[in-house]
Length: 128
Image 1 (tube, rainbow, N blue to C red):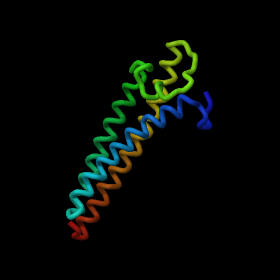
Image 2: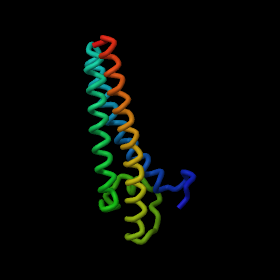
Image 3: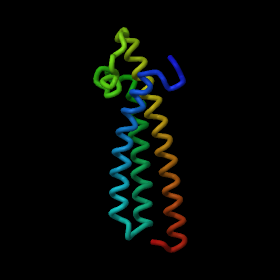
Image 4: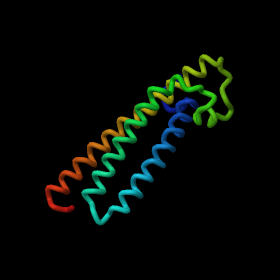
């Protein structure tokens, strides 16, 4: 398996997970925009939502190797689909999705911590 980003299964897993994370981030952003008059509350809401996203992504990463590969968006994105034995395809797709979910879970956790600290600083300076 290539590590330079040209592996089609890795690319499909990246697109699949990034799409879901993007929609989740959009929802968090819209909720925070609605709370713009209350910046500290908006930051704490964003922090809690990002933490929830991290937990969901970590759980999905743990479950990814056991989820049937033919029912994943990553597999459906592959065109043409590689001709692999089912056990090999399950292992490759499951591992690619697990790695990608875990990477984005770590990013969401870091974002959550940063947003919580920003809310704390905003609160200390009396912005909310």
